[in-house]
Length: 171
Image (cartoon, helix red, strand yellow):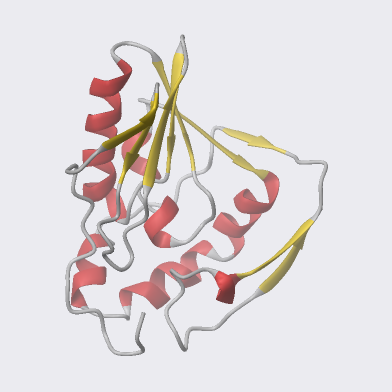
């Protein structure tokens, strides 16, 4: 993403949905900046949604699709990391899905989430509109992993160029 303000709306469109394998569906990002690919993974008793899209209005569309896709199966939500376009729509899933993340991501949501919300709101009116009404929610389930990995925020293509980066080691 360029350092200039975003001029298009980062909106999730429930179009071009592709089934990659039986009960493995992607809602593609259509190469739109700040829109993630969203996964929907089904099992015999439940469905896992991966990513919310940016803000509650995008997440409501994802939830509606997932609910219809699930056909009565229990819904779960997880996100790959805490950035706004991946996780800042979780409030739309409250009461409809169990939100689960790893401990490091839960800490990032609490510790860094408010600052990222403000930073992204400052990146232009289209982003600020999508972030209207965002409430950072506490995950229903936090699990710990036994592996360690290093992740640099600057390596995520969703971090705007010129934005501050962080390095975190997860244990």
